[in-house]
Length: 277
Image 1 (cartoon, one colour):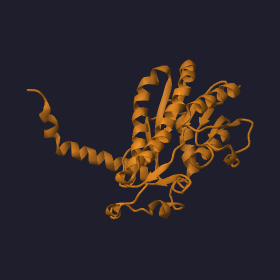
Image 2 (tube, rainbow, N blue to C red):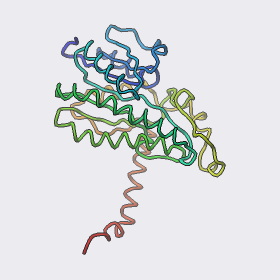
Image 3 (cartoon, helix red, strand yellow):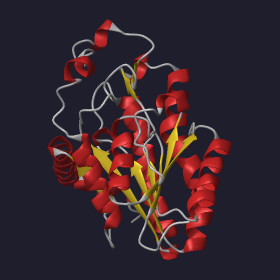
Image 4 (tube, rainbow, N blue to C red):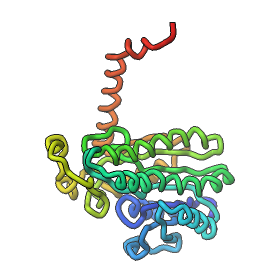
C-alpha cells in the first residue's frame, strides 16, 4: 500500500528510451511504479527500488494488460497515472508498406494503448480519479512523407484520446496526449523503427530513406527533460488535452494550424455551398 501523498504510475514500454526515463522521474519524485516491459531480460537498466515492480507486458495482449493492472492494485492499492508509451516507428511511403506491417503497427500503437485503457478504467472510475497520458508524436498531429502509416497510427491514438477525455472527465479522470519531437533515445535506431516492405524508386525524390540513420544520435531533445515535463503535466490540476514537447514539435503543430487556417479561408465558399436551400 502507498501513503496518501504518493502516486502510483503504470508505464508501458519502460525498458528503454522515454519509458525508462519516466520510471526514473517518477521514482525520484518518491512515487511508486509498475514498469511494463516486453522482455523481462532487457529490464536490467531500470533503477532498483522498493517502490518499483517490473511486469512482463506485451501491450498487444489483453490478458497481460489486465495482469499488469492487477499487479499494481495488489502491490500498491491504486493507480494514479497511466503512461501509454510502448510503440515503434515505420519509415516508408504508404504504397510501399505491406498490409501485415500496417496491422502490426496498429496492433502496438493503437490497440496496445486501448488494451491498457480498457483494463485500467474500471479501477480509475471506482477511484474517481486518475490521469491517462498517451504518448503520441509530432507525426501524430502533422504527418510527413515517409511516415504516413506510422502517423496514421498516432492520429488514431490522438482521436481516441480526444473522445476518451470527453467520456471520462465526469468520473474525475484526466486524459493528455503528449506529442514529442525528436529526442535522443533509441527510437530512430533499428531497435525501434522498421522500414516499409519494399522501396519504389519513384518515391526516392520525396523520401529521405536514410533520415532515421542520419538523425539518430543528433536529436536535440533531452529525454530526461521530457520525462520531467511529463511528470509536471501529471501534477497539474487542469492538464492540457494535447501538448507538444520540443521546439520541432511545437513548430510542426503551429505550421499545420496556420496551414489549415489558410486553407479554410481559401475554400470557405465551397464549404458553405452545400446547404439545402
